Image (tube, rainbow, N blue to C red; front, side, top):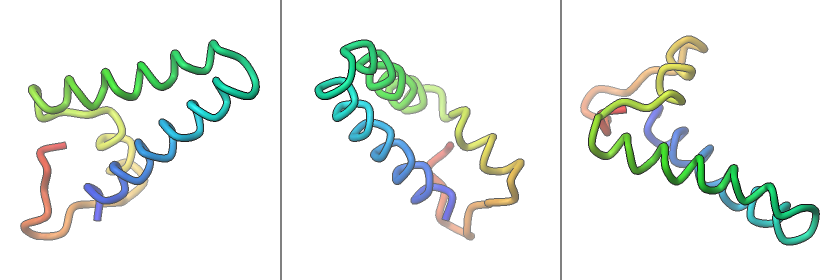
Length: 69
């Protein structure tokens, strides 16, 4: 559950920041870069901030459904 939530939030943030960057202000592209950098570092460290935040809100992994986040 948490893995799917992380992917959904990251994808939504990327798409939203791309649209905001195109139609509102180019500075929104910084958010796209931040999300991409976070995904990249979590691939190597098996840690992501959103995973910790979701745990504090009570969203946990199902058994066998862990991406290492």
